[in-house]
Length: 199
Ligand SMILES: Cc1cc2nc3c(=O)[nH]c(=O)nc-3n(C[C@H](O)[C@H](O)[C@H](O)COP(=O)(O)O)c2cc1C
Image: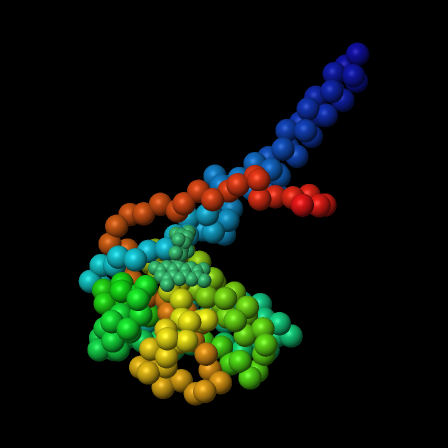
């Protein structure tokens, strides 16, 4: 009898442990205790900033995060232009229709790619840009992807103020700053988007 009670208790404990173990369904929900996942779920586009510069060490970490991205054949075709000159930020804000927040930001990182080095350049650079956005979120910074590629006119504006060589294409301009407002990430999980084995 005692043996039976003991084995039933062990079974119950095992079931309880496997439900709460890292990697179980609960841990993957948006209210996770996994710091990396929490940061992914908390990331949002931030378009208003305090009148406060982002420290150089933090910009360096953002660039390191960008360069930690995966890339096809490990070619790393990215180049990063850090813009902190007021006149350049204002000129970019004036020329780019959907990046007016650059006029408020004190820094921006332009993620560029070498199209001659890799035909995957914009995919690799998108991974780098996402790493920068996630790193910014994790440091309490606000950032947003504003598009340059594939719009010739917007790429032309970026080229004009950054003297990029012909083969280096600007993918996006990421304004950076300390968020002026407390914003929440959108809830995007949608079960209907998931397909198992077939669509
Ligand atoms: C390829 C791409 C281009 C984007 N271009 C712009 C842009 O030009 N200006 C802007 O304000 N936001 C831009 N965004 C940000 C999106 O508007 C934003 O990611 C989307 O509304 C979802 O909001 P969230 O980032 O807060 O989750 C862009 C995002 C991506 C991925």
